[in-house]
Image (cartoon, rainbow over all chains, first blue to last red; front, side, top):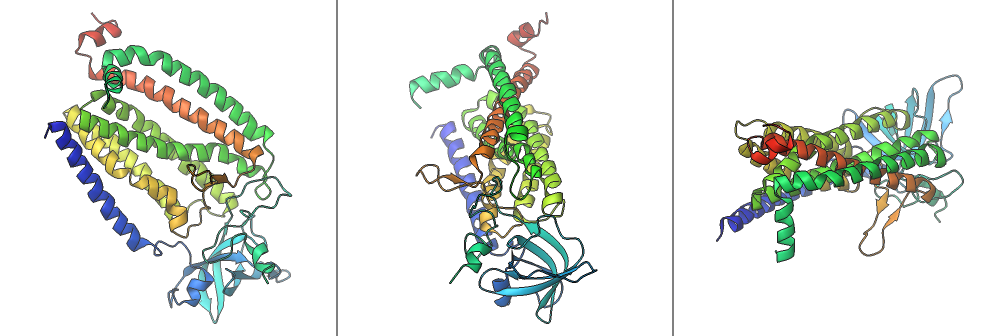
Length: 155
Length: 254
């Protein structure tokens, strides 16, 4: 074997070894490296029983209620299969709106998610106003593509 | 390797030839890059319509997304240079990697900073530890590691080889960054190009009137990288070969 072939084999072996270990590490991390849990994942019992976690989903259109004269807002977060009511007092991100994706941090108190932080999770669609795109809403795992428009018009 | 390719590679791998022949290519890249970035910025900042939900705030995409693509591309470039340098012992490949690494680190830093500035008004936070942002931050540290490693040895050759191995191993982060938004639930939105470019199912989530300046900016950034990496590599091989006749002649030393 020429020295060049030897070096090729050494590097190929190294790449295969690193690739394999990363592949198994990623497989183990699949479904674990989650920045947020969906309402369905919470219903499956994957949320911690005590302490904060992040809940992600779409703001159900028609569910947003503001208490007059206060910074408190209530809405329902859904992934199309399960829904969780959320209450939050504070400043909402500019992109907060019905149908928008949202990641809330807080904890579940008697079935209501009491949030202390709300972040907007928008979709990958960019276009001028007035065009309908299925990428307007973010993809929430387990939900239907097309966001809440698909959810509310679903039979 | 067939004869024609092999001859071509060996000719270009010769430092004196590369030093002479790369100069016009650097100029071509520089001119194309200047024109493309000028057109891309005009298209992105003036001609493209405001976004349906982000208004004019979305226009930072014209710097953020091409920078992010460059940060991934340049790391793959480092890994390929490393492989060529390690297997075929072509010194020019290591000099190219050495020239490219700081440019890649700069694009990664630009990606992280513009992303952070974009995230605050849109998402409501400067930073989150989701899989996309974290894996891109790791890429930045990998770049710093490659740069530091190549300069950490008395012997340039040892440094080159150590840096090449880190670049090859570290390149595993590139697909992780790309697929992070599909594999894990992240706050960062999904990719703007979807599907497979090879079976004709590639489609995009961006309106054409907003997309073309993005692609022109990307062309400009690629050519900017081309111009800069050739310019830096030329200085790098001069520095590395200052004890040889051709290099002394090139810098006008006696």
